[in-house]
Image (cartoon, rainbow, N blue to C red; front, side, top):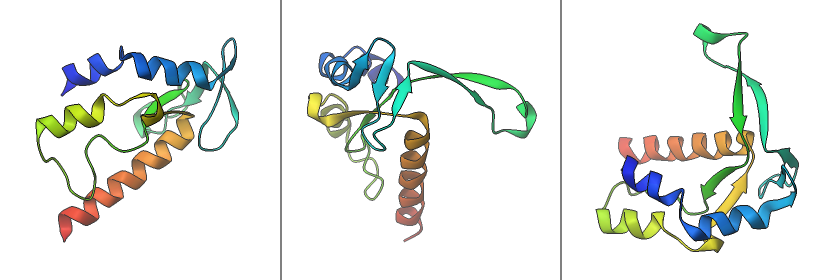
Length: 117
């Protein structure tokens, strides 16, 4: 899976979606909240072990509009993972770190609900 994810970072349509989100050099627009974001920002760590320290966060986060593995269904097959991982430009969105965290948390909750049923 890590090899596939690494390969998807060099996928042409992903780069095209990133270019479409670019407003000017080093500034992008979040597809969710529509705010402008710098290419990199410093954010505080949330973990207790590194409380008070800062980390460099790369913006924008490139996210699949449809999750690679559907949280409600789970893993089905590698063919489906590859098909959903390598989507065209309209399947990607450039989002800010905060929106990416919120979307990921929501998908994680959906996955937990699906696994408990």
